[in-house]
Image 1: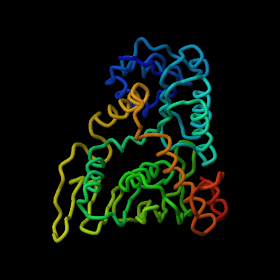
Image 2: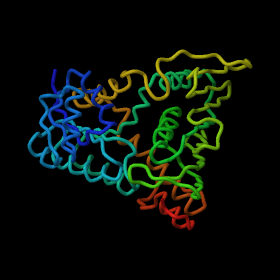
Image 3: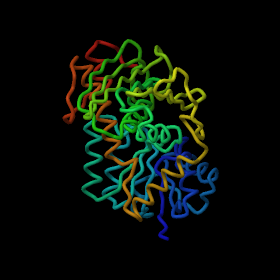
Image 4: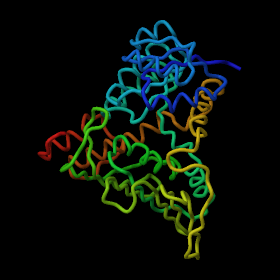
Length: 342
């Protein structure tokens, strides 16, 4: 069994989520930890018992000296694009990057292009794809438990770039990752915030049309029915994926009551089951050539929808996909509307 040398770039809170998955994978050995704050790398090494890992404050030096097979990038969104390109150029075999992909659609496309040119396996941490609640819901849809899927309602807490990347990605998963053909979106720019250096909105709504005719409405912000969740409407019933218990339930054809479906964990966590599955996918992709559910292709589709959403709000019209390379972001929309950035 081949063992892969793993390095971290960024040793903050989110890196601990990755660490558990690598520690549980016998094919992975963490050999290098990189953070601009040496004390952060030291604390991370102690917390996760990575005593043999070499500590760095310069990721480029780490790439030259450690020559890792796999790199986990756990940095702020605005830093992703350049670091991914540098890792690809350094000959890393697999790059696993935190979400969201990038601070612009142009950057997201450039990251994917760099990875493909270098023959690098690139994945993004849409780890909710591995949570039992979502996997069970998708299985019910595939089995025809609610007939033909017609419409999806998705509810996002706020911030359609950061939190929304999970919700858009899971909306894709529920419809079998069928492409979206058009996006109509609006954003309320009267109140915003900043998250890891990027400004964001606190209220938005998007309407997606998929290539198979399924439609989805995504509501984002505080003024909605639920903070986080999904409703799947079919010709013969409905499914709800809920933040509150029961986390999954189904109402079948001809029934007025809901039936709870027992699943492990919730919509955020299932112990370490989902991260074990994420890291196993990464090593299986390298050693067995398996298709990756957290692939850059899936991440690009979710990211494209989000930036098309911004573009639609800016143009005040439906945007047809594929989306052309654009620098439009939430800040572009807010500035054009006369809102002050925060």
